Length: 148
Image 1: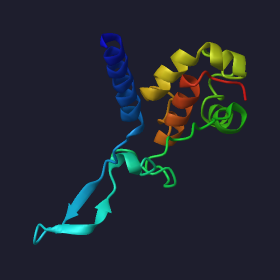
Image 2: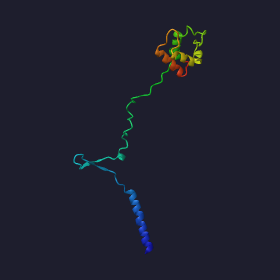
Image 3: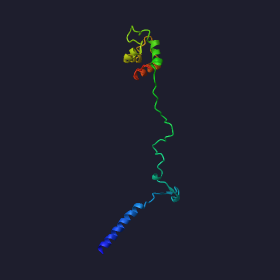
Image 4: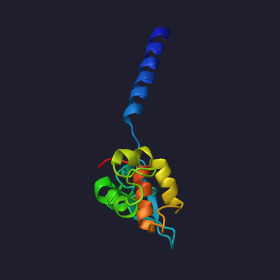
């Protein structure tokens, strides 16, 4: 009788394990009325039931960014920078004084010196460039002094 009772006990044990795996309890929370603190008939969804709701610290994706990254400004040597050198520097620095500002190559080669004397307002002689032109030349040099 012992082997039969052991077999019966083992069958019951295995059967109970399988029945526990298939018996899933629902996770629900009963809503309470805030005034009377009595249960309300509707169930409140749990966080597992609403995975598509945005998280509090995540901004919605359909709203524009209030602080978009600034777009890089492309400064053209031929359209923006060269006219400044032609009108304010060329009279003195046309090959007979250092630095020569007749070509892009000579300006780019001496860009650090040119930037220093323009930003410090030592050049041009007879009056400094307006702030906008100083910033334009400085930014052009800081971005590689491109021949564009």
